[in-house]
Length: 269
Image 1: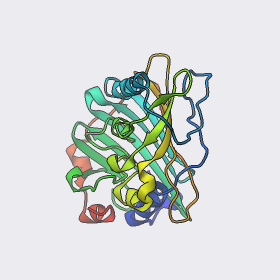
Image 2 (image 1 turned 90 degrees about the vertical axis):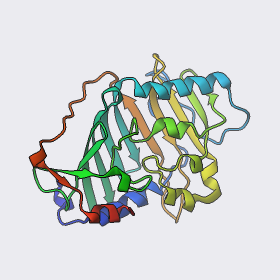
Image 3 (image 1 turned 135 degrees about the vertical axis):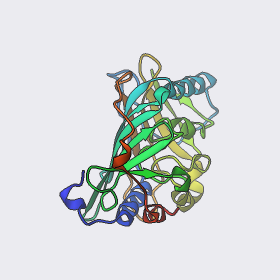
């Protein structure tokens, strides 16, 4: 599972890359795929005015539907972070691949979720042909390992959108508003350290979202605040392939090892 550039890299290196990416944000992006397939989304700008109750309800319903079916999720934060996953919340299974890229560094982590058990394949930690079992209770909030028990999708979309109070419709199947990320720390790419770094900006973060013609979430773009002089990149999530079959089975016991303390320490646990 390792790329040539990942060989010899430590998990601490991976963690540094992911945290750096998580602190990046975007300026002026739009939600890809929002609205109808041929439609476009509004630019993510700070919302002004009260929430539209109908828009708030429609977007909440779209997020809730993620927990009723299977789907594919693709999440990016600029060129440094890419996560693809297949999720099946009703059956409690999922698979994911997280790639993090930094200066002269590229690491890939594979994740497997079976009910409440999380298994990973991490360069420098997991032996070839095996899976590392992770005690999720030892991971800090926002630890970016791709999938996580208790989260319907890697972006933890429902929790993320619950932090908005000003959703407005911005066209057919398109919505906009702002998020208070101090109420949503723990979503993938948005950990508590990043929220603290952003300060007051974290309370007023613009987003756009789109739903398809069946009222299901199709896209989400969050314009995370810039910090520490880093280049801005938006957090973009696409939700596709609803109803797809997710092949995920618990590995045989002979192929499972428990995660070492070094893994948890690398993530601050």
